[in-house]
Structure formats: C-alpha cells, structure tokens
Image (tube, helix red, strand yellow):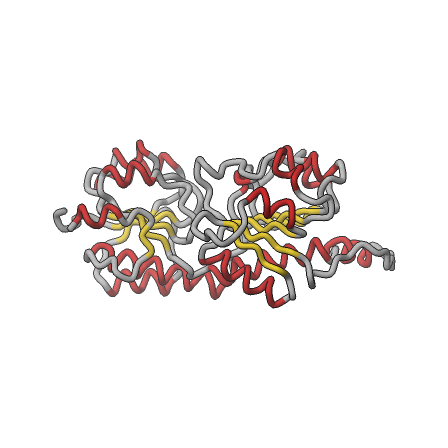
Length: 317
C-alpha cells in the first residue's frame, strides 16, 4: 500500500492534549464543522485517515466509497458499530480503536447502575427530597448473588473483577471463553445480567422477549454496551409485568429517548445518558490513545494497536 497522502479528518475536536500530539507529529487535521453524515461525505474525498469521535456520523459503505485516499479508520473509543468493517476490510483499510483506555470507567459505571437498582438509590433520593422518610424494604444485597457478564472482553473482565470484589459469583459469557456457560444457561442462573459486548448484526436484540423470559423475576439487567443489544419494547413489558426486578441502562435504542418511552415511567429503571466512559480522566486517556493510534497507524506501525480487522495487515505487508 502506498504511503498515506492527505489530512486526518475528525468528526469532532479531540481534547487539547490529543490535538497537540497530532500537531507534534506534523499531522494535518481537518475537523468537521458539525458531525453530520452530509458533512462527513463532503470532506472525505481527500482524507488519508478518518477519526469518528462519537456514535454519529457513520463510516458506512457509501462513505468509504467516497474516500479514495483513505488508508486508516479510527474510533475514539471502544465501540465500532458506526463503521462498516466489511467494506473497510475489502479495501484493505485497518480500523483501530482505543482498546482498554476507557474500560475501567465503563466497568465502574456498570457496577454503579447495578447498585443503583439493587439498593434503590434514585428512588430513595427522590423520596427524601420530597419530604418522605420511608424506610420501606426492597433493597438487594449483592454478596453471594450471581452476575452473568455477557461479553468477556476488556470491559467485561473488569466488570467481573469488580463484581467479584462484592462477593458475587461471576459467570463469563463469551464464545471466546469456552469454560463459561452459554448465554441461555447463564440467564437462568443469574441474579444480575450485565451486557458489555459489541453491537453487531448477530447481537442485535440478543436480549429479546424469549431471553428475558428465561431470567429470574428477581434479576436485574444492566446494559453498558449498545441500546440495540436489548429489545426495549420487550424489556419494558417484562418490567411492567413484574417479570424482571429492574434495569440499569446507560444506552438506549433511541438516544435521547422519546418522552413517551415507557421505560422512563418505571421506578425500577435507572437511566444515564450514555456517559459510562465520560469521566474526564477516561476522556483524555481515550483521546491520547486515539491520537497515538493515528500517528502510528499512518506510519504503518500497528504492533501496539487494537485493530478490529487485523487480517488486512497481512495484505498491507
């Protein structure tokens, strides 16, 4: 593959330290005025690399076709569902992510959501603020409970360690972890199901009505993956009918949600606005990892990078 020519296109600015790293490496940067699909398509023809900072816009097949000079794609984060990996691979273009740079922050948020539901934190807070000093029961202790962590990657393993610290029995659920139980068996055993897997066509609505029906009525579902991993209509129905104890959701199928979304009206649901990785320390760490990945990737040095489609590296060689 010839040396890359052209600028690096960012869908949004990175924090100052990351921008300085790119400047120090004499990387020419163009930042979109707004992170829209139309703006991305208009700027792509001359780009040697593209960095998507958020979940939108998407580097889909049409966008990749509009970028004849593209040599590198990078996601400022761990999730890459807004990239067409097959189309990138067909062109021999590596897709790199920032690996485990935000894994601790996301894992901590997953446990925060689990505790918030299990100990009814937001409900108690609202009650006290409203002048009610109700000490009604309903909290759940995590010790000796079973947590199924679906997706045993960088984030999932950290979630597992934190859950273990609370005295929970941890079930890793992942095709790459053959010693763990299958998903259906884990759902039947789990007191908490924590989703930390990538969104792909195979995992879209992985947790649907049938799988929710396998879970204990006392179980809690936590999602720090992507909203579409869960069938939210089925989840709302299960919660409203008392077939599930609660849910902690950092991600939704529609972000922000429709005000009429039934999940918003349920006390046993704790929501956050896709902020699991948004701690300032993690944001800067991710951005610096992203800048480093761009610099190294453009130089052809992928040895220390998290490459989603490593099979293209052999073709590049």
